[in-house]
Image 1 (cartoon, helix red, strand yellow):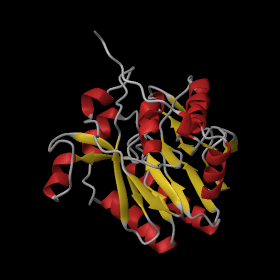
Image 2: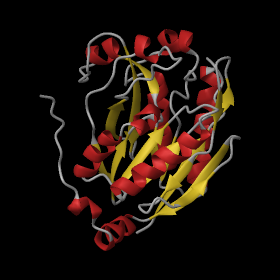
Image 3: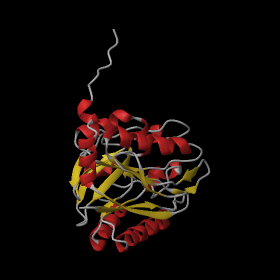
Length: 277
């Protein structure tokens, strides 16, 4: 059974929460109209990754209005939605009874809904970006690495900078992940890194890797777009330029199994421990 995957490369505007939400909801509807089974939004599409001053004002719990609207859109359009990531208010989520890594502060949180609008997984970004970024100062890193069954795949989520840490992807592969969605806010000029890292993660783990980037300009940076789906051989299945668009392609969980059977590198892997005497 093939699955139609859509990547919503949104125009993200700094601190334009209403406009960003309208564009996200419209993209979900367009994806459903094109027959997509699953659509993903980019990282921090609601406030804009580089609008650091807006993080606190835009933070919400998991039960907040932004994710509620996305959940309703998933149900109304009968499509699974990875709600990219938003700035989560951890204290408010904890007050709702949610399990959080800390009961205060903010997190960069991605939430996956199925086509019934049911929440299937919550992923809080593990690796916080410290290079010319306020993320490490403003946000709390996540601790969990959920992998869930959806549409015939074992689906996991990582976020943007996580691409630079292959051990995280190896852990997901060990837990059975065969489709990793990577909402991102990747800027110019690091185009080659954006192309190479997810392709390498796909090749290493013999899994589909889909990177979902935003499009737009901020005072600090311009997002480079180029949302892309890589298959388990690391071959580019579908990709975009740097303008807002919807990338749509069909992916097949049986292809993962066949590639892993043909080229059993995961079975040949040896475990290593780093020791310092």
